Image (cartoon, rainbow over all chains, first blue to last red; front, side, top):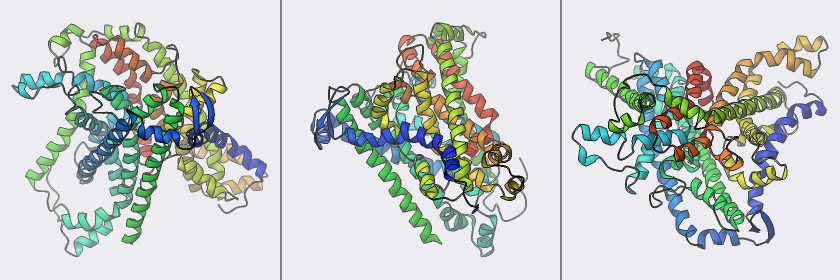
Length: 302
Length: 285
């Protein structure tokens, strides 16, 4: 480090392949979406500049004007519920693991296993398991005499979305647990030891030493969970269909964006690009805000 | 029961608590494993039996459903496509990333900080939102509905993470290693290829294995960028399969296993690398 860098032609040879591939196929198209949203589109043919008209369509045209706030609400609930469960249960599991339990390696492998499966496939697996007539869940409930509880889990608008969120927890819980475990392992034992010498009990050590030191991990978990919650697609596709059924009760922004772009009208490119811009601002903006917030908490601790 | 070590460290380690913890942890493990074992067991039973009794052991080992999925449901083609596309994307992304990561990890030059941030920001950018401009770009290049088009996009999505991890690996290598080679008159490319590259092999393994998982599982990009059924990857093939074989559950379960097994095996073989990849961003994002 600190040594004089090689001459620029050498630098270019090293940097150009990654830079070009990344810029041409991801960053440039992403920036172009903003440009697309300001023009009139007929199919994939670009027309004149229309200012914010595509955005007005997005918020004014039926049924988009109803589907967009509903999808946004669903993503938000998805994020809040997922966060609540994984911060409590994920952290609890990580703490219990750290105390050293027999079969720890095996358990950890098992917990992370679902995370390797495609969200779409996870959705399909559970769609079969929750099938009202031939699914093992209802069959199991009937077998133990709880017939009253058996229901079309995914066919009922009141249960479909909660069930999808639970399936998501099944799928995803191992990941925050791993992050918390990594964070716990990085905390020097001396800190807790010092607190114990001062007479703190286990709970006090956890509350006043361990918990604050986990702030960076909470930051990472929050940001990644937020991004993932607002990008959820395959899981809901498999469990609720492309329309987020039944009756739109499981519709999310990812599905709405896909439908607007590829199943919309002739001006679909313009309206979908406007939606992409809004979603970008929400996802990237909130991710940045969460980051800044956690950095501030961290800074306040030292 | 194991005897508790004497000491105050585990002051709340009383026996009922220990038992409750064990029940909770193993109970949750059961909750994770139950649906997966159900998939395996039911793939070995004829659909008629599954419908009659959803939870039961197979009467005999019957692998016919796998044969149906593999040949009639076209999983042989989907599987091969997924394999070719994923391996090619991972190779390309790792190759270009290791080059960029080398200079970003080893040197400071004008714009190096900005470039690092540029690559790093990709970890948080929602790239699916670029799909319409990307679609038109690939169309103008004649790459819609081709494997190459998808490979280029996938390789690009792998770059931020790979550059992030690999430049950290390069940064940790001591400077003295290259000095000797430099005194012997070796150029930058020789130093990179002969001295540095062999040392970051573990990093490259982590990066390659870790990229494999999301690409193998991705559904969104092939859904939009591929059309013909002979080019589809497993997840998109899966959506057609679930429509066509709706009532043939035995085959559905077999298809799920064919799609999932490679990743489960990869995870069990390379647990260390995958967990290292999953936890790499802790506190940094």
